[in-house]
Every structure is written in C-alpha cells, then in structure tokens.
Image (cartoon, rainbow, N blue to C red; front, side, top):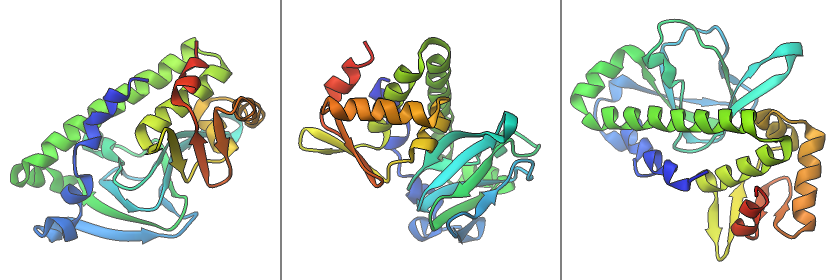
Length: 228
C-alpha cells in the first residue's frame, strides 16, 4: 500500500487535540479512563454516544462472525481514535473495543462535539482526515479480500502495518508489540496455520525475524517483491 496515505493522521497531534492535560482548556468536555487488560471498552449493541482516543496501551476493534469466529477490524495504539462512527450514527455499536493491555483513553461525548468544533477548528480538520484515512484503509482491505490470495493478503498487510506503525532502525523496520498469529489471521481473513507458514517462509528467506514481542523486517524491498 502507498505509505503516503498515512499523512492523514501522522501530521496531526491527536493527543494534543483530545486530551485535557495537553489542551489546558475545556476539561469539562473530556473524560479520562483506564481499562484493565481484557476489559471491554464497549460492546456490540452498546449505545454509540462517545468517541475515544488512546493515550497509552492497545485496543482491539472487532466483531463476532459466523460460528462465533472473531473478526478483527483493527489493533490500535497510542494516538489513535476509535468509536468515531458515533458522529454519523444515532444507533448502536456494530463492533466491540477490547483493551489488550492496561489502557488509558480520553473520551469525548458525542453531544459535545459541535461545541468543540466551534471552539477548536483543529477538531474539524482532524475528523475530516480521520474519515478519509478510514475510507482508504477499508478500500485497501476490500481489494485484498477480493483480488489476493491468503499469502498475498498476509504479506500486503505486513507492508501496510510497517508503513503505519513501523520504526526504522538503520536499514531495517521494527514493529513493536506485534500481534499473535491468530490475531493476524483474523485481521487478514486467513487461518492461523497459513499465517505461521507464511511467516516461517519469510523468515527462512531472511526477509523477516519475529518473536512474541516484535516483528523485524530486514528488507522492505524484498518483502514488497514477494507480492509480485
């Protein structure tokens, strides 16, 4: 995926916009809350009336499909926003949000957003770019599901993830707090066995190294070439 897509959110100080300790104003319009590992922030069918921004920790956004199979939509980290569909929906949540570790969030209530838009134009810019980013991400995922096989979907997602959350270390790229094989399978609509096979193949080619804590991409060009 073209990494230029990610300028939408990378160039905005999300924490500075959302969190009262950074904003130093209108703290009455914000709430901070900490969730324990394994605690749901919201569930499917909960009332959709709040928007959340991650200050620290990780959050899994997902749904339960046929045969109670978990479908992961995203795994989010510091500075990322979720629950934003509350802005355009008066109904209920169609997904769940789960804290994957101890997680702190800033919460903005839906009915306070118009006032914040008036007082802080940065909010309007932020949400316009947020929705644009979400559309680009969903288009890319749909394209993967329709046109690519399981192996290509996994590799393409790794390239995308490196563009979003990778940290350059010399000529290599490291993704810290890497997801489990099952989580990677759930987010790419593949199986755990397929994920393990593909990752081991890439490791045997010395393109990646991985353990439970991180994924190291030794050569991004070689990883991208695996898609051709």
